[in-house]
Amino acid sequence: MNFRSIQAIYVFEMTRFFRTLLQSFVSPVISTCLYFVVFGAAIGGRIDAVEGVNYIAFIVPGLIMLSVMTQAVSNASFGIYFPKFIGTIYEVLSAPISFAEIVVGYVGAAASKALFIGLVILATSLFFVDIEIIHPIVMILFLVVTCISFSLLGFILGVWANNFEQLQLVPLLIITPLVFLGGSFYSISMLPKFWQIVSLFNPVVYLISGFRWAFYDHSDVSIVTSLLAIILFTGFCTFIIFIIFKTGWRLRP
Amino acid sequence: MTDMLSITGLSKRYDDGQVALENVSLDVKEGEILALLGPNGAGKTTLISAVCGLVVPTEGQINVGGFDTESNYRLARSLIGLVPQEISLEPFEKVINTVRFSRGLFGKNPNDDYVEIVLRQLSLWDKKDSKIMQLSGGMKRRVLIAKALAHEPRVLFLDEPSAGVDVELRREMWKLVSQLKSQGVTIILTTHYIEEAEAIADRVGVISKGKLILLEEKKALIKRMGQKKLEISLQSPIAAIPAQLQHFQLSLSDDGMSINYLYDTKGSTNEITKLLNEISSADLKISDLKTSQSSLEEIFVSLI
Image (tube, rainbow over all chains, first blue to last red):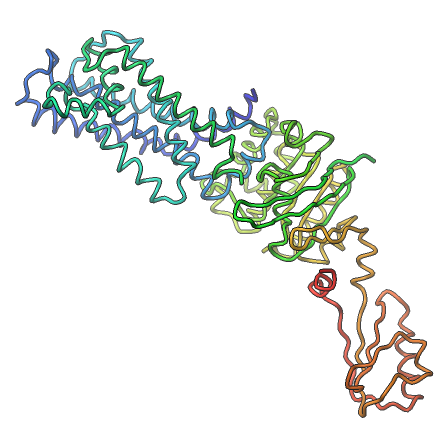
């Protein structure tokens, strides 16, 4: 392992993040506040507690997951796409480091940013509602693994994308719908039977459900299934990245 | 001296069938400066990219400092510094940070004293806290060189270092190259400019259509480049070169209206005076004189 090289990539990426700290920090806080106002105060008042959990409190894990997933994907995809776009990728590819180390540097930085934003949203939500986290260790574990796996997904996206449109399209067309329909704002048990079954094909359901279990000890699907799902998803993304690097696809002709 | 870079049977064919390099073999000694000449698209950049790990060779072997660039890529690449042809820099980054990044990326411990030496050497020290987007084109190229030198490479690749660079910076770069050479750094550069090869290279290679068609000491090539042609137009056509002029290396044009004389600029200049005197004593009337030097393109064409 070449730790200095990994550190160089990680620090470089994080510097970019801290340079735009205000945007990075303010935009999730504002959007979280908006969600609380709209779903919590305006609509939430008319919704009973979901499975014994106050509705505003119920949506907190979903909101965190929503931001973490989208931020992880966009950070990681941009992180690798940008050097590809402006050409600075030559330096990373000519450096004495392995592909695995490149991934650790870029994905580690993207996951750290997403984790930071997730924690900021959690802190923001404490201003709106009292939350008691029943399984804090599982909560942190779930959050960290989600940050990593979606950063891996973002990395794949960034390597694949040939232009900025493609970079925007996948999050918009695939990830946002999956997250919104993945039970961020509702329990899938609230859906008609048919749509409940359809929802089970959405991988994000398992992640949000598991994350919510860590908060309230209540979930749509069993926590074991959720854990399996996230492990499977992380493994899948890692495998794809392994293939990309084995073949040099879109990076090393 | 040992070979610092050794390329054997290197070929690169892209998936679309395009052949970028074909069976290129090349050895460069430690501390040597090799200039690679060739028209655009000849494969110079592909050759450099293959050595630096940016392109996966289809066939062949590359050794840098005795390390195979595939099986021992960490050790091989840590010896290499690359200055790319395109100016590729993160626009919002500060000069000093991007140079520090390069050093860290190549696994070297942080050393601000060394970074300062490199930046001073390239007249970038005053600009160390400027963002790259604020720099001029020439300054950006210096930053690229500083990044390549940041990890103390033993082999430096300069891909078209003079493209879009003013005379002053070019001279400075040449000075830097000879300084690096004196420190034992091996340098491989690609260029379009024969003067550049003439000024700094020890050896010159010519690449065309993916093949290394010539590799020789600079002096031999310069001799070839130093040939000039004198075209003597006559007032009336002649059938053949007069016998008393046969000892000059002359040729007659097809219409018999002009005599061509090839000569060496480095040779004695008396020859031309003698030739003109003998032409007039042979009673040939001259209507015009024209001299021309074979250009690099013509040399390429004649080689291909």
